[in-house]
Amino acid sequence: MEFIRSMGNGSLAKGREALVDNAEMCAEMTRAGVQAVGLKLFATSPAAALTAIRSPEGVDSGKIIKEFRESFDAVVANGQGEMKGQLFRIAHIGYYDYLDTIGILGALEHVLARCTGKAVDYGAALRAAQEAYARGLSSKRQLVGA
Image (spheres, helix red, strand yellow):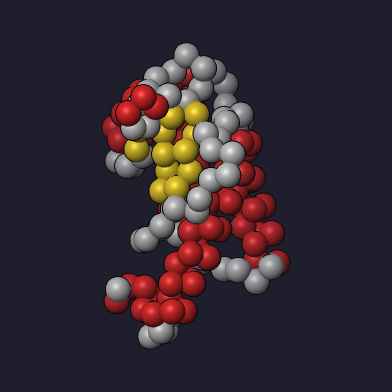
């Protein structure tokens, strides 16, 4: 609660609004980035808290999760239940900001190259995310920590 209150300069209500705005911006950036490298979103109407991404054809998402952890010490979640192995999830809420989003997308490009063995257009995810961020700035939203 103190973290949320601090986001709102002492106001819990304003902090909640800032937390949600931040999550929505991180989600927009992530979704733009993953689509720029050819991945598909799982949900057609996703929430701001996380982005669920379909694993590339023929790649178990467990391999992607493992590569994130081993190469970047990054925590990315697998699908649950019947979706395990088919998708992975990137969170956007809480202690998560612009730099976390840029970092996870940069790592994603390397993870995809390693897990699929296919060429990756390095920088495509980052460029798309930064463009989404710039659009958000033009509508007066700004991320925490940015």
